[in-house]
Amino acid sequence: MRVRRCGVVMLEPAERVEFDLARLAGGGSGLYTTIDWIAFAPHTGRSFTLTAAEAIALGGLSPSEWIEADGIPADVLESLLAHTLLIEEGSEADARDQRVRGTDWRPTAAVMHFASRWRAVETEELQQQFIDNYQDDLLDHLGPPPPAVRERSDADARIALPKASRSALDALLDGRVTCRNFDRDRALSKADFAAVLYRAFGARAVDDYAPGVELLKKGVPSAGGLHPTEAYLLVRRVDGVEPGLYHYHPVHHALEPIRAMPLDEATALARRFVGAQPYLLDAQAFVIPTSRFRRNFWKYRNHAKSYRALILDIGHLSQTLYLAATELGLAAFITAAVNEVDIEEAFGLDPLEEGPLAVTGFGIRAAAKTEVEFDPLHAVWKDA
Ligand SMILES: Cc1cc2nc3c(=O)[nH]c(=O)nc-3n(C[C@H](O)[C@H](O)[C@H](O)COP(=O)(O)O)c2cc1C
Image 1 (cartoon, rainbow, N blue to C red):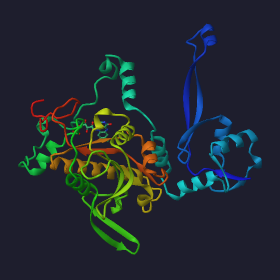
Image 2: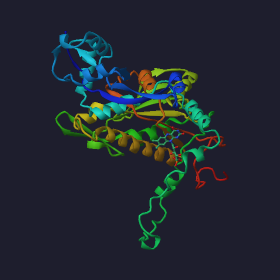
Image 3: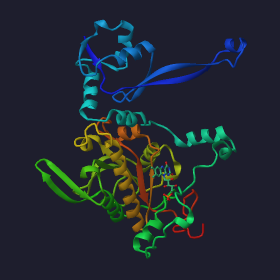
Image 4: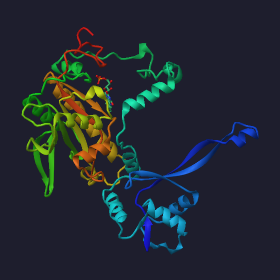
């Protein structure tokens, strides 16, 4: 059998603190520490605890050259093969590993991406644990945050800048307030739904840049002009659009149906997508910006900045979606606390090809506020 190391793996020497009664009886705290070797490989999407012998063996094996497995101690070989950290030539793991290699990920970025995906996490539970841990003295425990503003000169050294006269953009920016109070009874008009999608995600022009290289011109910037971000939709309440899952076609400005479902099911799925944050679930439409890695990495191969560029692209899309919604008197949100694995499964996305990095949504704001929103300008909530 010929083997080689998987293309990307990170080994973390993680310290574990344990308690031993015998040590306590012998004097001291009873606490002792050990080092666990934690291996994380993006093609598995999981981490494994290795023995020191396995970690050393893995570190000494080539990721490029196939070698006969004879020289590797049997127990080490068995464990590393089981975790697919060591790849057998021609195996299923080999095919999967090749796909990670073929995507031209920067290894550290691949580890970051695949190690931060969630499945079925409920953020309210995490928040409650946090509150329970700190009880009432959260601020005592954490101390104050760093100041809101970093000041680099004395007040009298500052050069005052002229104030811009108030514009339509100012009104739009002031009115952009993350919504956690959507109207649970009303449906969004198809026209408004379509307008927000077009302004955030639609292609305004298609340019045949070079043979085989088509570039889209959008209202947002994108690294290399490649626009690797797709818009997948979970529609709840839009007039004339059945609840369900869709993909938005940015050139044809059209919905590509993936799966229709009853409203209840769409809401339950939305709950899963946003880590069970209840105040987001009445949004009429959810948009899941999803990066097609290869579209960006085609140009920025194994590049130190490419993954960062994917995330930055989504920031631009999200803000544009917020402003497009605000202009129409609608409201929007974004959340990074999302269950990527559940989203991938629902839309049938191959995580080695494309990955959701956030969930945004928009719709009609409720008349009354029950959940907190940050509106110190009273731009939305006049009396609150
Ligand atoms: C990257 C990112 C992640 C966010 N995640 C959440 C979230 O998980 N839940 C939520 O309710 N709001 C989330 N927000 C919204 C922020 O809480 C909100 O922007 C902030 O409170 C300021 O309010 P504003 O957007 O109305 O100015 C997120 C915003 C950003 C940019």
